[in-house]
Image (cartoon, rainbow, N blue to C red; front, side, top):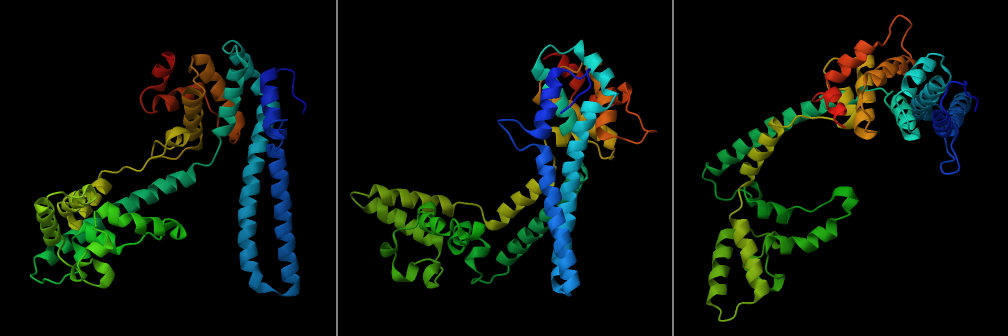
Length: 357
């Protein structure tokens, strides 16, 4: 890969590795892009063939595959184009000249170029994800509070045969199997559940007092009290049975389901969805701005990942590189002042903190 003479050797090597790969990572971005182009061409061919044969039932699925493939191809092409600009755009000469007075190690050059490239991305989906999370948080808080109130009202109606699962966490757990992850932990939970709840071995439970497996719902508190009394009257209590009795007693003192739902509602009300790292830095403000998002992500990567000091020279170079990386229209320019203001609004004062590193 050819480079202009002003590109530092460390930058040349790093960009070439990212695009073309090396002996340690032979699959570079150019190869990924070529594979994506090939996959897209295959889908286009399949659409053409199905259309010609009149097999319209396949077209909806193929068109969706094509849309996904185009999005993936465009993302890869954008990555490669950005790296090519960082290597060949004449504006980079000024940035490299400024940074030559700052950087003394190859790892600084690699970190700077990697951050400049990696910070260039679409942060819109992450903003939408936070918005959706906030909507769900509010619904969870509202629904949990409503259900907690309904359960309390039910307990005061005077009906004695409400399902025990409405109020008792142990009973709810006895009735609930774990079918998550296609039942991956189903049998493990079924085996561990009696130990978690302190249930006696099945043969030790009188026929009329066995929990829900045989359809009966004996009072957990009566069983606990009777078993604790009986255990205390035994001259020599089995340690295993003592442990089970302690667990059953503890579960008998656990809060009702309605109280747990109150806790869920309270946790939801106090929850603020957020992102971390460069994404969190980029979308920290409510207002969307490609320029500001990029600069914040760029600054976060430099300080938090590559541990660089954001000196005046580095920020001047960031302004130049930002214009090259995000490739804004000619009438939109990123200035040093834009960089300084964008980074000053990050959590804390990154400019002040970076000086202490």
